[in-house]
Length: 352
Image 1 (cartoon, one colour):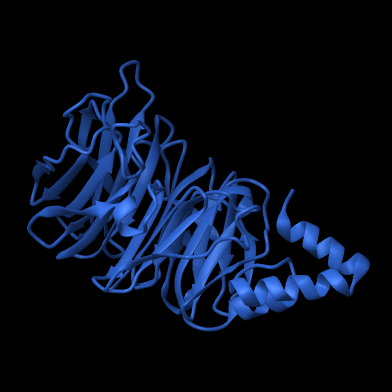
Image 2 (image 1 turned 90 degrees about the vertical axis):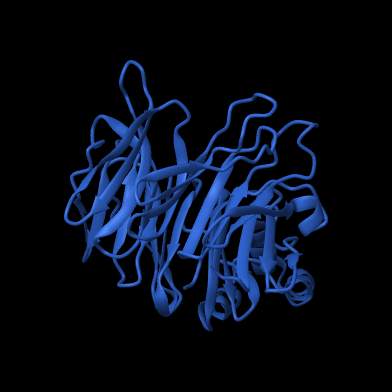
């Protein structure tokens, strides 16, 4: 059922007619026309602006302004990704962790215990993973070393973010009889509980600096219920008072204290309208930039999003949706070439 496999097998078997057709698709769409070495090598060189991951082990890269789909290394879903300087990246999901080296090649590496649910990195190449058993692990060489998360063995990690090698935030929950949301903070050598027992757990987190964080997650299905998005600053918790009708915060990225973006799903009800919503933080307040229907011309949901500056951002979702902001407008990319084999993109990371 996968376009790339069908074309790959056909080119090897028939060689002429459909090989030319595959090349034509590649040229016309500027994307993936098959599991061929030429396509993979082309995607491996150049400046990497973003990496997105999704269903069926799907990976796409924004290289020199063009999106390329990479060869599949695993069959399961990939739901977490982080991008470091020089084009090094890590992706995880379904019991796998993959690494992209500076030469653009992807390969499997050892995974930490449990299932990786989140990945994060800092400017000094510090990489950590959050897991389904509540653990937080640091990558040291080729080994994952436990950072003694308070939730390890008694809960789970939904997301983790770093503001340097010794500062970060993580969100998750516990396996207690009455489970509740937990926020962890790292302000030195150890992770500790910052807040717990929250009825609406946070699922996503970003932290551009110590003592500053943005946290979001699911909202109750109640008309008038505010979006589950909160700013944590100097131990003050400030919820966003925006009613976006049953939408969930699916991604937050904050490269600087005065710039952050939050992304939501489509709401899932006729009343929602407009699809996913993007909100922007300017250092003092959050404001709604708009819904997908207005930003990219279609009421699509956003499952992941990232930003490196006020002039660059990416949003991804089912379809698959790939929308890029260039400082002037949001534009939806043509995903026809890889849509069949990567129907949904779950997460995306931007270069810093």
